[in-house]
Length: 271
Image (spheres, rainbow, N blue to C red):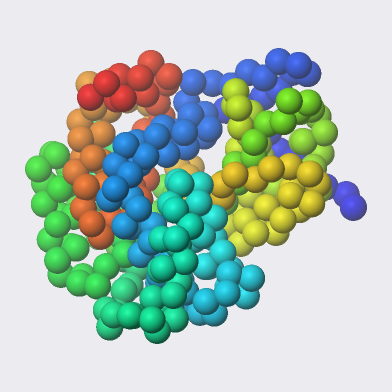
């Protein structure tokens, strides 16, 4: 099999010495996950809802339902207990299932400093969700836009997180990622993030596992195509908008186009 892998401008490798910029995709992903983990109680409810909807709309067996398999993988990566995952699937299968009609809805807009914000929601009441999201933008000094107003600034990608083994060999993994159909990878201190096309997540995940790598998380995300650097003071304003949005029950995840350095990430963590 002939394959190639493209290493992004945000990450490059020297044998035995990984060098990454402070605003790599890995740093952004790690910060996003850490921020969501702080709100674990609310996050658990949102993750269980995604599992429920995926199971209700398809086969309740993850082996036969790619959407459900992806939902379960993401739920596990955020430490949602197995009994809550099983309960959500059982509920979708008719055991105590409710009659709510859940739909995926996306809201787009601009935050302070012109930062594009993409809000992925799961709701059973579009009017309520639209009003709540609009209010969050307004209070934070942003503006809710029309459909498609910022979506073109993002691209859908798969992120597969792999645990680094004690005998980790970067060159070997780069080859494994290429053969698995991955597009890119970035190496962190304890984990490696592999990027792939949005429809290739399960294929790449399975191939890496068969190659002996321990996959500890995988999800579909919206990556900013051209992240933009802004001042820390403005980044804090945007973060307040993100926090307001993530506090809403119907909001699943919020993406943005900020290009943040390690120092700025640390400043946002202290808010």
